Image (cartoon, rainbow, N blue to C red; front, side, top):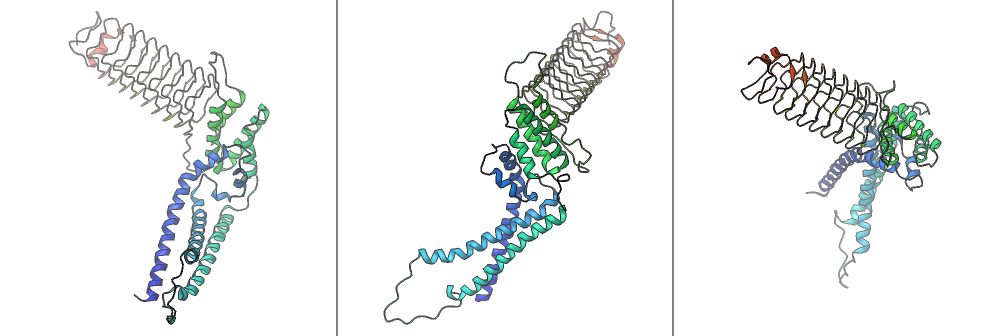
Length: 449
């Protein structure tokens, strides 16, 4: 292999290495930068890195959009190129300084330098380093130029300044209520104006609620503090604005596990996929709220108002829903395993496909509710009202229906094998469409199927 071919091979290897490192670094920035940015913003205002955030280009601040990918990639490529060139140029110098030169014999004549020796490669490496440095600077300038052209002029109205945002975040730690309320209001306004700030603002509000929640056992009539209530409103409505990006499927996905906000007003808020495990929400108003796929396992929702709420595919196993109002709520596909629904109002609710295995429904009112395909195996339905309810293909094996009222209920293909119906009020003709066996105890007036 000639020296020219060797140089070309080395240049090819360096180019491929730069491209691979750029791709890996860009992917890492996209995956880790949002979490790091939220952590930096939640830190005290006097932290050393807070001023540095003000000098970063806007396209480097998460969350990212598709339009941010080219400038971020150019910036990463420029940084990798400059780092590679600096390392390549410093390595021979450090090697010469750290490695002693071998002593030459006294009578030996100096050998002419080889074509591939450091003395002959010096000019080539110098020229290569110069051009690589120029390339890195051009890439960095190209990233900035692309950003300024694609985003247009920045104004306080269409893209809020980082200074205002950082100042509002620092005001959240103020001891004065009015200062904190003003900061929350400012963050909400900035989030509605800037798509970049919406997810971060929702996460900040969730952290604020966790920090300032109730720390004592509140009485039934208690309500959250004013600032906590406002923070809940922001994180559940940050995308309720006409400037929402077309086609953007906004979900909250906020971590609100174990919060204590009894009596909170969450009416109509979007808490889609929110994590509310073991949260204290007793007496809370969640009328019309969107809790699709929300995790409410073990949560206290006793006496909560959930009328017309959307809870499809939510997780509510072992949740406390005692005396909760779930009238006309959408609970399709919900996991209510061993949930406490004593005295709950479920009239006209959509409970199709729900898992109510071993759930406690004593005294619950599920009149005209849709329980098609529901799993009620082992559930306690003593004195429950199921008047006009649809129990098509529901599994009622092992349920306790003592004193339950199933008048006008649709029991088509309902599994009642081995169930004691002797003290249940129901239309005798409805049993002809249900699945029974010799172990099923029928009411005295009911004919044998």
